[in-house]
Length: 84
Image (cartoon, rainbow, N blue to C red; front, side, top):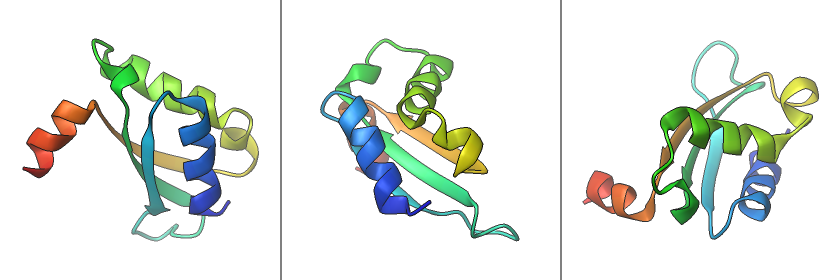
């Protein structure tokens, strides 16, 4: 699945989200993705709940089009602190 299509799915499903998706580095570059997702909807949510929200946004694509996805999830404030 094209990383741009994955970005669109995430951004459409999560309020005010910004997603950056790329192919993950490694031996399975073609079917492994890495995503960085920033959304105010993550405020007060656990890491598991944040990842579940992204997985829900991707729906059946996780079992049909995406073999694996690495996730990094942030609130806007966390992202600002991380990137300084």
